[in-house]
Length: 173
Image (cartoon, rainbow, N blue to C red; front, side):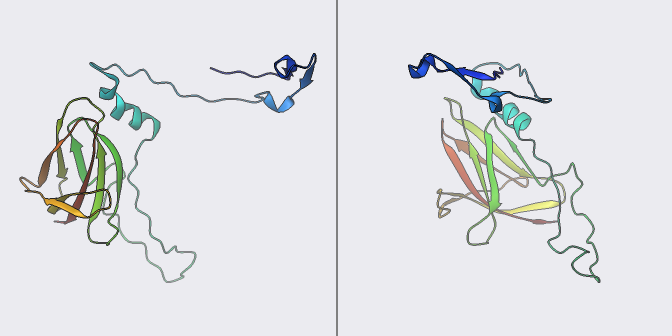
């Protein structure tokens, strides 16, 4: 897992000596995280848990104007709790990206199906939010197909090993 040395044998370089390489020493404390993720089937079934372990997503609200820069600034109350969210995704796909749409009309949700089988994916707006419109788009965000909504959610089929790009319109209820 870890290799540290203070010298490098230069026999590899066809020279009969070794030279000091003090920067190759990993001096000081090291901190590592390990995860053992039990799963059934292929590795693709563990990808969401791996992604969450390596890059946990935390909800945070941040105003762009700070109290220090504007003396009369008043902090807005939080809309989401720190552990809250406004969307849920189910169906065994991997979350890739959530960003504002390039045309600033809605948001883009990008998902990836890593499995060898097609999967049914449901994207649902959480309590306090309304999913008013959803469309399947191309990677360039041009509309490909308007999707039907049911129970504040949209369901799409994700083909095997394919990226799904959705344009969503979500508002406070």
